[in-house]
Structures are given as C-alpha cells and as structure tokens.
Length: 251
Length: 219
Image (cartoon, rainbow over all chains, first blue to last red; front, top):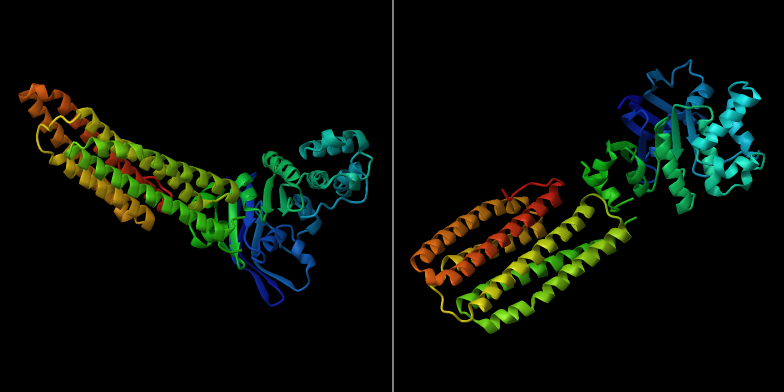
C-alpha cells in the first residue's frame, strides 16, 4: 500500500500538557485506518492535526512533521483552507447547515470555485450518490437539511465533505450518535468510499474498527502502542496493553 | 463492550467444565480397561450408560461458548479461549466414545476367556490416560512445554500399538480359532491410539490458545 500520510516524531502540547508524545505513523492510501484507545489517549488530537483543526485551540504547539502526499502540512506557506479541501472531516454530531439539502452539498464547490448550474447539479448528484443518499432525497433537494433523520444528516455531511473531492476523509466518532441501522449504513458507505478516498476514523466502538477498518492504531496516554493490520491486531495483538484494552480489561 | 467480571466468571466455568469432562474420560478409559481385563459385562454396561453425562457436558460447553460469543463479542485471546473450548470439548467427547467402544468389546466377547493376560493394552491405556491428564493440565495452566510433550508421548503410544498388532498377528497365525477375539483386541489398541491422538489435539489447542498459531503435533 502507498503511504499518503506520514507522521514523524510529532509532539503536540496544549499549553504545558503534552498530548501527543513523539508519535510516528504511516497511513496507507485508499484504505480505512481506525484510531482506538481510551478517552484522553490522543487519538482525536492526532486526527485533528491532519487537517489542522487544532490550530483553532489556543496555546496549541506542535513539533515534528506531518506530510500529506509528500508535502509538509505545517509549512509556513500552507493555505489551511486548501488543506481542508484536501482533507475533509465528518464529526460526531451531524452538523448540516440550516440550508436546503442541495445547498449543503453545493456549499464546498461554490466556495472553492464558480461552477455553472449544470456542473453543480452533477456534483451534487454524484456526491449524494456516493454518500448513498441520492435515492432518498432526489425528489426534495430543496427541502431543509434539518428535516432529515440523524443518519441521513450524517450521510449528507459525508456528501458535503466529498463534494470538494478531497483525498482524505477524517471521521471523528461519526456514528456514535446514530442508531444501529444508520450506523450500519454509514459503515457500508465508508467501505464503498475507500476505493476513492483515504479514510481515517476515530471510534470508541472497537467492533466497528474490527468490522470495517484495514488498519488499526491503538493509542494510550498520548503514545501509539500498536499499529497493525486490523485482523492481526484484533486476533493476536503484539502488545499486552492492546490485548487488555480490546478485551475490556481497562478503558 | 465486554462485562469483564461476568465474562471472566463464565470463562472459568468453561475451564471447569472441560476439567470435569477430562476426569470423566480418564475414568471411562480406566474402568473400560478394568472391565475388559475382568470380562465384567455389568461394569461395561454401567460405563456405556454413563456416556450421556459426557455428551451433556459437551453441550453445556457449546451453549456457554455460543452465549459468550453472542453477548460479549470477545476478541484476541478471549475469542481463542472459546474456540479452544469448543475444540477441546469435541476432542474429549470423541475420547469418551472411544473409551466406551472398549466396553462394547467386553460385551462382544460375551465372557469368552482371554487368549492371554492383557499386558500391553493396559500399559498403553495407562499412558493414554496420562496424556489425557497432561494435555488437560497443559490447557489449564497454558503450559506449551507440556503441550509439546504430547507429540513425544504419542510416538510411544504408536510404538506400543505397533507392538500389539505384531503380537496379536503372530498369535492369530498360530491359533486361528482366536481370530474373533484377536481382532477385537486389535480394535481396542486402535481405540486407545485414537484417544492419544485426541490428547495430542488438546496439546495443539493449548499452543494455539497461548500463541495464536496452530502447530501440528500429530505427525
């Protein structure tokens, strides 16, 4: 597998607190990588470094290197907006804009360019199709996104994220607020999407990580304890701390 | 998410069930050999009737293991513990059936005097019983050294079995009238040899439980 994200000796401080301790990790392209670990272990922090969402948190300081497709994303000349177009994100709670379904998906393409009406229609349809939502909403695209169910809203957020054709999609506990059926739909969708996008997900649901990810990374106290093929990590982990965590002995 | 305390208790229950099955097998084998040596048909029948207990214990292992998989969704070594419990209970159930087959031979001999005192068969059964004990112990203690010892013991069993076949073949040639009994005694040797193979399987399960890799000790 080709590496698309390369993290080297990354340290992240929240003021005096060292939240990530010398983390190094390669993330493969067009695969699903799951970050697991107990609360406060640094997994969401690392996820947010990948599209510089931590920049918004005051007193955050970073040392080390994060490269995406060979380019340093913390370089001085990096445009954060351009980076975030390349690295989309879906959050725990669905957060559609209080606009129509169509306008939610069209928002990104409009922001990053001036597509014509036909081109935009095509982009919206393709994105909704890829997010497995088109068939459910095609007849009322002008209806408010807030009228959709939680699961549909989350798929709309995924459609919105992929409308700008990112390389990478970050998912921060993207199914934790959803019911089991909606969760299953998102999981199926994510597996479809990995043929086009690199997906990095944080999940507290270890069975979800075991079900859908190709690689799993286990974090503890700001360190990576183990990163391996998911099948290996969940069947015969190398580190006893990983075994203890996935077996429910702590966390 | 695993409810650790309940889960650990249930895993312990599985271990104890397998230990109980192991004791049942040991007892069935030694009693069957004793019934054969003494041509004790009443004892042989009593042993056969008890087989149902072993089958019930195997079902308990299957039910408990299935329930744990459904309710706890175990991973890694926890999952291997259950997979191994299924495998060992099935091996023990087969061993029990084979020990019962020895009692059935006693019934088929219908009190016919033994052609010669049994020496190697009890010796082989004793060694097989040691293997049952040790294989179970290797599982209970997660002791891979003891598990690997099964391969060596199994070679000794195979050696004894070959010797029994040779002896009985020679006897049959010299005393053709003993054919019926000699064939049955050869089968007894075969049953014990198979019991030892299953004990070796338990050794393999122990290695798989501890390491996650499946060795082949039955070569």
